[in-house]
Amino acid sequence: MSDNPRRPLVIGNWKMNLTELWARPLLDELLPRLEDASAVETAVAPVFTSLRAVADRLDGHPTALAAQNVHWEEKGAYTGEISPGMLAEMGVRFVIVGHSERRTHFGETDERVERKLTAVRRHDMIPVLCVGETEHQRDEGRTLAVVERQLRKGLGMLTVTDGGEIVVAYEPVWAIGTGRVATSEQVDEVHRMIREQLGSVYGAGPAGRVRILYGGSVTPDNAAELMALEEVDGALVGGASLDAGKFSDIVHAAL
Ligand code: PGA
Image (cartoon, rainbow, N blue to C red; front, side, top):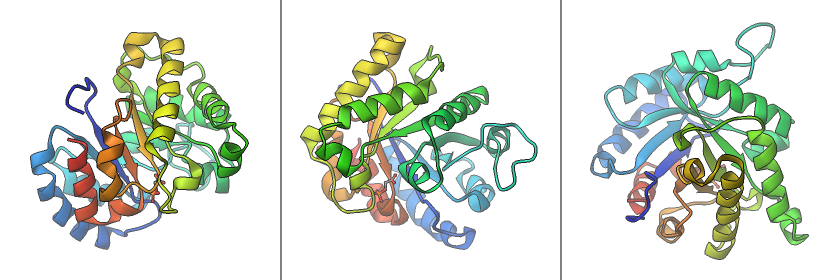
C-alpha cells in the first residue's frame, strides 16, 4: 500500500468479549508489538464497560479507542443506551455504526444509521459505517445494489469536507465470523463501487481521502492479499483481534 495516499487503518472489534480483567493482558501483549507499525493507524473497540479501563491503558500510545455502537440522542429517557457525548468524553475516536450484527439482531435500520452517523460527527468522532450484503443477496446478484443503498442512506445528508471524517467498512455478512473470506475480486469490485459512489456524492477529492476497510474473517493468512488491493485501506477485524499476535500480524500486513 506504499503508493496509497490514505493512511492504513486497522480496527479490532472485540464485540461482546473481554472484560476489563481480560483486556489488560491482551493490551500488555499487543501494544509493544505495534510500536514498529506506526505508519498504520490502529484502534480497538471494547465493550462499553471496559472503555474507561482501555482508555487509561491506551493513554500515551497511538492506538485509538473505538466504540461498537452509539445512540443518536444526547441524553434522556433511552434506557440502556449510550450517547455520543458520553463516548467523546471517554476519548473515543472511532464509532462503529451499522454493523451487520446490529442490523440483524437489534433492528438497526438505514435511517437509524444515518442519525447515528450525524450524531457521531457532531462530536468530532469518526463514524465507521458498515455495509455489506447477505449470502442470499449475493446469490441473487444484488450485492452492488444493496451496498449502494446502505451507503447512500447511511450517509444521508452528511457532508464531508475532509475525508478523514468518515470511514466505510465493507463487510459481507456471509464472511463475518465464518472463516469464509471474500475473494480479492469480490472485495475489489465492491470497494471500487463504494469509491465511485462517494465520488458522486462528495466529489473526487474528499472521496479520495475516505478510508474503505474490508471486514469479514480477516486473518494473518489473508491480510496481505487483501491489503494489497488498491482500494482497500485497512481492515475491521473481529475474531482475530482477540489474539495479540494475530492482530499485530494483520496490522503489519497493512504497512
Ligand atoms: P470477523 O468479524 O473478523 O470475526 O469475521 C469482523 C467484524 O464483524 O467486524
